[in-house]
Image 1 (cartoon, rainbow, N blue to C red):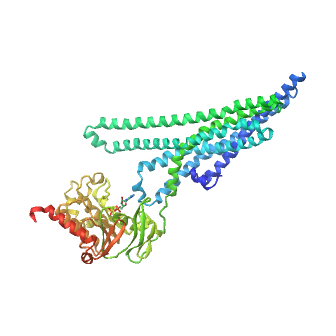
Image 2 (cartoon, helix red, strand yellow):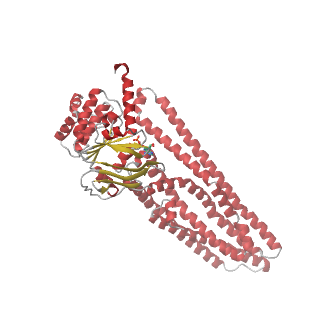
Image 3 (cartoon, rainbow, N blue to C red):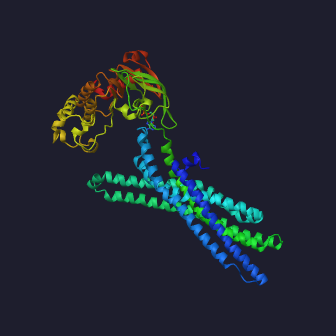
Length: 583
Ligand code: ADP
C-alpha cells in the first residue's frame, strides 16, 4: 500500500513515505484509544442498569477513576507521538522536496525551459510544494490511520453483531463513493484555480516589466483595470471551487451520519424480537459517534487530497522528465557531427524521422527546407538541448548523450537570431564568450567581428550600457556582438541561425565578413533561410517534413532537379519579382 506508486502519487521522498507510515500508525493508536475510551461509559452504564434493576449501590469508584486516568495519559502520549510523526517531520520533507525539484530542474535538458513558462515552474516549486506540505502533514497519515482503525473496529463490531454493524457503517462507503464521484469535478476546478493564479502573476510580472512604457504612454489605468479583472476572476473561480467542494463534503458527512438513524431503527427491531439486549445497542451507539469523528475529518481531507492531486502531478511531471546527465570530460577526436538515424518528438508529434547526415570539420553544412521541416530542431539536438528519441548523434566519435551538457557546450558557439544580450556594457557582453578574457582580447574579437567602428561611436564606447536585450542597437549590430562573443570563445563547433531579418546591404556585407572569419576551419551547421548564402556551403542537407529529402553539394543538388532546385528557382523568381522593373 505504501509502495512506489504511493510515493509517486503524492510526490513524496522516501523519508516522506516512512514518515507517513509512522503517522498512520500513531493515528491508528490514537483512534483506537479514543474509541476504547467509550468502554468506560459502557461499564458505567452497565453498573447503572444493575443498580436500577437490583437496587444495589454503585461500587468501584476507584476503578473508574483509574480507568479515566489511564486513558487520559495514553491518549495524551499517543497524540504527542502522532504530532511528532506528522507535523514535526514535514518541514524536512518540504525542504528536501524543494531541493530535489531545483536539482532536477538544473539537470533537465535546456530545451525544457523553452516549453514551460518560468512563472509556472516557480509556482510549482513554491506554491505546489506549499499545498502539498499540508497534505503530507495533515492528510495522508490521518486518512490512512482512519482507514485502518475503522477496519479494525468494524471487525470487532462484526464479532458482536453483524446486523448492527452493517446498519451502523453502510454510510461510510456511501459517503466515499459520493466523494470519489465528485473527484473529476474537484480536480478540474483546482486546475482552473491554478491557471487563474498564473494569469494573475503573469499580469503582475508583465506590468512590472513594462512599467516604463506604461507610464510613458499613460496607460496605468488600463493596465490596472486589466489586472483587477484577472484578480477578480481568480477570486470568483476560487470561491466557486471551494463552494463545490464544500457541498460534496457536507453531503457526504450527512449520508454517513444517517448510520445513527439506521442503527437505532435496526437495534429497536432486534431488541423487540429479543435478539439482542439494550446494552449492545448502547455500545454500538457509543462507538458510532467515535467512528464518525475521524471520518468526518477524513472527508474534508479527501477533498483536499483531490484538489492537491494537480499539484502532486505537476511535481511528478518534473520528476518524470528524463534528465540530461553524462561524463564531465568530453574528449572527441576531431569535431565531425554525425547524425545516425535520428528520430525525435517534442511531445507525441514526431518532428524528425531517421535523419542521417555528417557535418564535417572545416566545412559549412547548411540545413535547408520549408519552414517547420525540422532545421532548428536538428541544430538543438546537435548541442543536446534536447535528447534524441532514437538513433545517435556523435561528435568526434563520442555519443553526445553520454556527455554532460555543460561540458559539451564548451565546444559550441551559437550565433542565433534572437541573440541574448544582457543589461550590461558592450565590453561585458562580448566577454561572456570567454570567462576572464582580457580587455585586449575583447577588442581584438570586436575588431574581427566588425564591431569596433560602431562601438567607438557609442557615447561611452565599450563601456556603454546596452539596454535590456540590446534595445539601443540595431539588428545587425546585435548580431555582430554575438559574433564577437563567438570569436572570443573560439569553439570548434558553430551553430548558426541565419537571420531572416533583412539587413541593409552595408550591414550585411559586414556581418558576412565577420562570419567568414568566425567560420574558418570550424564545424559549421547553418540553419539557412536564403538560397543565395546556401550556394556557398560545402554540403547541403534538404529536410522535408522531418526527413532528409536529399543531400549533397550545391552543384549536385542543382543537377538532381529535386526540392532544392525548386526552392532555388522559387526564391530567385520572387527576388526578380521584388526588383520589378529594375531587372
Ligand atoms: P524549422 O526550423 O525547419 O522551421 P523546427 O525545427 O523549428 O522547424 O520545427 C519542426 C516542428 O517541430 C514544427 O512542426 C514545430 O511546430 C515543432 N516544434 C518546434 N519547437 C517545438 C517545441 N519546443 N515544442 C513542440 N514542438 C515544437
